[in-house]
Amino acid sequence: YPVDIVTFCKEFIDDMQMVIKPGQHVVYHHLEGPSTVSIDGQMLKNILVNLLVNASKYSAEEKEIELTTKVQRNQLVITVKDQGIGIPDVDKDNLFISFFRARNAIKVQGTGLGLYIVKRYVDLLGGTITFTSQVNSGTVFTIELPLTSLPAQPPV
Ligand code: ATP
Ligand code: MG
Image (cartoon, helix red, strand yellow):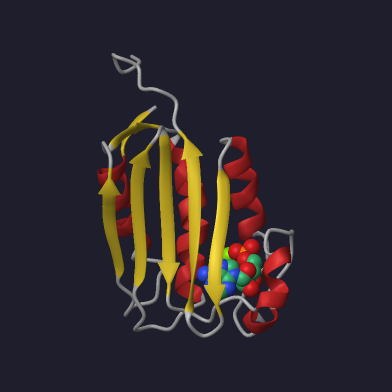
């Protein structure tokens, strides 16, 4: 599935305005590489929705959210960065377990399934997901997805 990742992300962010907090701005940068990639767009959307909603609900209204994409060495690298509540060190190992919620997230509504599902999708695509986070400072999720080479002609 050939997808223009820049157009895809811009449209995706427009769609997300309905679900993110009113004052939150989502900034998007495509950092490097050709923007046309071969990837399952629906799958990618399912992943990004979960990460964007998390970035929004675990950070305050005035805080910025940053989305970046990069294509390098036949990989699509995506980062979602927020300036939110962060993830305590003691909870970091358990984040992708179903129904797990970090101790500082209890006051925010959630079931603890989003990241579990995201991890499953990323695994299905043969990729990896990692994060760095600091409490009261913010979190960055990084997804690396292998790209299949583009067909010379788009499939009919
Ligand atoms: P839902 O199933 O509705 O997504 P949830 O957001 O609680 O519920 P996950 O998305 O799986 O569940 O996230 C698991 C936990 O990881 C969260 O409860 C929260 O503690 C922590 N977490 C996830 N993303 C962030 C983030 N961007 N900043 C801070 N904590 C986060
Ligand atoms: Mg979630």
